[in-house]
Image (cartoon, rainbow, N blue to C red; front, side, top):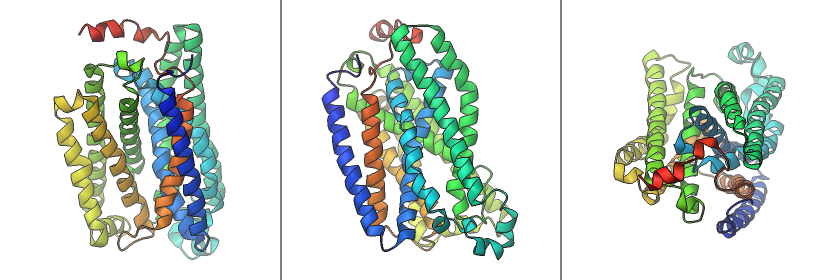
Length: 393
């Protein structure tokens, strides 16, 4: 038994269409970027940062579920596991960034570093060799955690060994710590170092919140797509949706808090090496994007997710979740792209096709992984009696 037979045609169609879009997107972004390799790499990096946020967030939420044992995680566990396994694909897709780092990062250019005392002081960390070594460290941590959790989950389906649930619980605590350090380091290396004179001590935490928010939003969107098929059709209830909606609300508030906290600390310090990052994003052509994020990425979903009726209806909740998936793309665009488009947003065709290309390949890989296992975990002791309880509630 693998995935639900009823859901398989839908997943097959999703995989096929996504793969076609991905291949076309990659071809177009390469063709369009041939005359401007630097812009090609910039668009690629922006799209990569967005799409890797989902599997990284899925990994964290999966460990959070194993750590707490909450029933909220049971309907989405297979979606989280499938998302986490796409880390392998993202490790491969990062190779173009490694090959083109000299065109993306000032600190990778020896001539620029030689004339800049600040970059010289940071050279012990920001250097090409360290960048490559840390790439292997980050993905090594993520792949190890993903490999163990998914292997034990498959064994649990096959053997019903109750000790495997304890094993997944035991690794999830320290796993979240190592995952967090790796995500923070990657955020600094891949994004913050685009403007190496600027720094933020909570930058890594902000990306942790972003990844958790988009991963849960994407998961809820997929859950709605599969909820009409057995066995999910007969095993999810409004109480599950309410719990997941509350968690989505918590992640939304965490994102807003960390974003505001970083702004206030930077603004209050008013240091010349810190304030320019916000000056170019909060004023001029980028200001409307920032305002839109405040209103549409926080206030609108915040007010909606306060409503119990919204959280207990998966169809409505999935609309809010899909909205958050789109707005997170805008958020990452606002964080990353002003590093080179300093005056105002300027959307390039390579930006669009890079998002479509990498996204298509990722969604195809996700659908392929989701078909490998049953849509609900088998023999998990935490799942016993849940159906009876929910339908008797």
